[in-house]
Length: 349
Image (tube, rainbow, N blue to C red; front, side, top):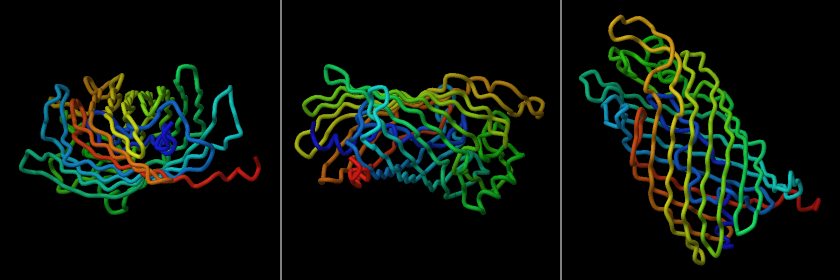
């Protein structure tokens, strides 16, 4: 297998949440398309790896249940995700290679609310998303050049937001404005009687995500698929129970010498409506229960280009928006740097 695969098949560690959502929790669990270009079923050789993902969205727009732009919001964001992944190389479990990982995303976002109305509001913030713990990643090599992996990821409820913006969001929370999570106001997301709005840097909830990956790796080819299914705890700050969410990343690449070229695609689908509080148009009184037709849907696809500098590797992806419903979406770009740090257990072996 080409050296490039060795450097970048650190899948299942980049499981971050960064994009604002209108029908679900303010932040998605999985960084969209984060694992495109990786060998979802495989692990790198024994050692410690540093991975840095840089994710950029430009002028994302909000979409309604029919997939039409509703003019409620626009989002620009920059996200940096440093990750450490460790494969000790001496702890086989059930015949599988074992690894673990930790990640801490940071983001800067500019949110413009009610952009089609006379009372538009804009705010920018920076902060840290919830810490992501991956206590185990198990990878099996099976016949016919297939690899299968399983992992379990835990999102801690420890995110932070720049202090001034955090306070402003909290003061507006009772109006059904953006706070730690999206709330509904007159079947919209934003109150129209304020001058500033801020997207908090994290979701105020824990997440638990089983992950399954499968890859076919042969003669420079990488055909991979990864599936994640996320369960959320209740967000007590705004009484939202986020619907469960399925995230999928797909990869088709070919590596020739130091270069890798291919295509990637990603999809996200909530499998049940959110549950919590929204506000009635007719009565103006709070209504509790399932928020009907609130399942978010996203599909994007685009090219992948990578280069192995030896030993470091760089992977670039660009995705074009295909479908967005009940969410904020659009095109995005991502750059991934992988740096092997050596094997801290080599002396023991």
